[in-house]
Image 1: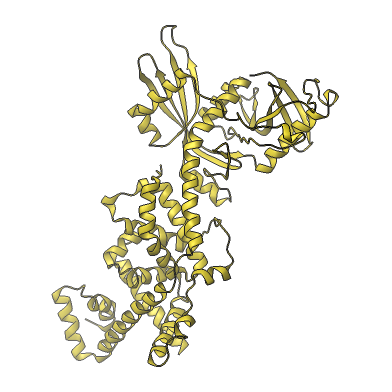
Image 2: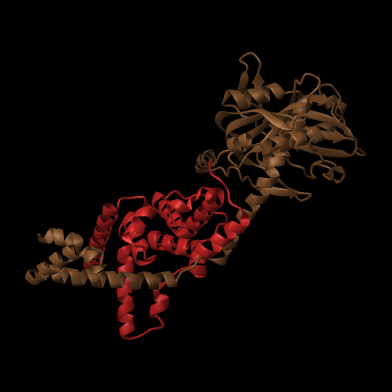
Length: 349
Length: 176
């Protein structure tokens, strides 16, 4: 046994991690090689010193209370955001797409693996001209119908759906599908939120899946950031039979960019200001806000533009502001760069 | 897919292991602010993917050690939840060997000077070697435990420790 081999084993020798014969070989070597014995003693002293230094240094540092508190608060915020997002995204998409009758593009996005994703951000706030009249008191009054809620419950309780979602998912759509007139069938669609995709997005500087939140009537509302998901999962539910007829998953990695807070506020401002200028300022003259009107900015939504020719979404985005003026709903498409309203639709509840 | 854990479970893990994670990180990266960044990242990771922890594959501390060391060595820092200046951070929680030496004269002072020299030497070797030193001499892990924590063969752990100590002694010899 040469000195190099002995030196490689000295740490194990000092820490009693050698078997009896190896130990004996090394001790025999020490009788004939004072250099190796000296090396062993020096190594033992270094190890002892290392423990002392690490103990001393470690005893002198601790994380600041501010950082500990921040971590705890961030986790609590994510927990709130998680439970709110599940219902909230589904409600907003359902409400919005029902209004625009854009269900088909939604399915195309989720099912076909299109790069374009539904992009959406909502804020309820008091702001803009005549802001004293603006109110958010009933801003989150949407709810599933009894049948839709029943379909969701059946889907979520089904083992095949649970396995598909792996414990986490966001309901984004519940669509009635053709029964034969005797049964009620619904498709329940979920976004499968993916942490790995979220991590990738975080590396690019976005805070994904945990977008900064504010609170409106006690409800967390994501203002900006990205929602990352890698699949659209679907369950076809028969609510009369209380069963899931089929479930399947469509892998579809992607992320949704949320409008920034500033963009949301700017879009709402543009829409409200436009209405306040009077009917001449608006293409079809439908949007007119007088000083006595009660104006509610319901939400600001961003969509990828659906191209019917290519049957896919383009990268182009449209920003829509939903307003209620004296109980009449309007959807104003806003051009943030040109600072104007380019399209107006009246209708809805 | 990663799975989140509940707040109660998170709190228990956080309370029990926050010091271990922070100190292991600090002893590896040698900087309070960076160690706090790592602390944040590790525990947000714990919250987001705690459901993937499998006790059959090792203890919670082994799992946390692996996440911590990976974050220390990868060097990718995400945005802090809150920004503090480095001075504030050092004031709040930083280790300063001078604080210790100022209070203790005589033979103890010589010992602490040696501590200071060794700490400086530790900080001059690379992070992957600092990490094994911290796991071994601060956390007190066995070679087997280090191998599990770092997901490397036992032989690699031993050779890495040998090299780490060799480099450390070489750095200390330079300083003499």
